[in-house]
Image 1 (cartoon, rainbow, N blue to C red):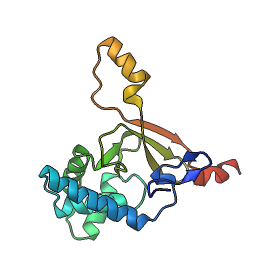
Image 2: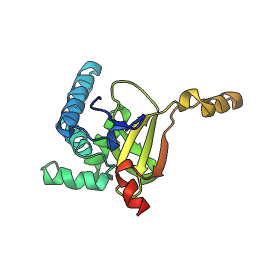
Image 3: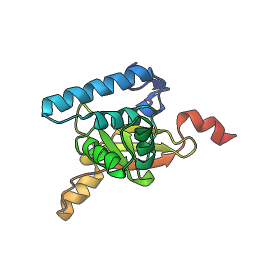
Image 4: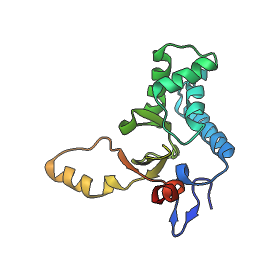
Length: 171
C-alpha cells in the first residue's frame, strides 16, 4: 500500500478517494514542489506556496475566489490578480491543474512526472481524484494522428459517484 492509494477489491483507489495520512501527503507534496522549483530555477514565492498549501488542504477543487478568501484570511491581500497569478504559475509548472468542468483548481497528485490527468469528480461530495490516463497512447491520439492534428494538451474529466458515496447513492 502506498500513500497514493489503497486497494479497493482489485482496483487501487486514486489519492482523492483513498484513505491516507493526509498530513504526510501535504508535506510530501510541498517538499516535492520546493525541490522542483529549486531544480528548475523557479521562484516559489510565499504566495505561490500558500496557494499550493490551500489546494492541498483537501482533495477538492477550489475556485479562485475561495482561494482568494483564504489568502485574505492569512494576510496575503485581497485582489483577484494575487490568486490568479499564483494559480497560473502552479498550473504552468505542473503543480496544479484546472478542472474545466468546475472552473476550479486542484493540486497535482503526480508532480514527479509529466502526464495526462484524468479527473473523477464525485457529484455528491465534490471529492476529486486524479488518475493517470493513457489517452496520449490511445484512440484519441490515433484519431488525431490520422487527421493531422497534433494534441498539445489533454484533460479528461468524469463526473460520477466516489467509493465513499456509493452507499448514499444506492439508498
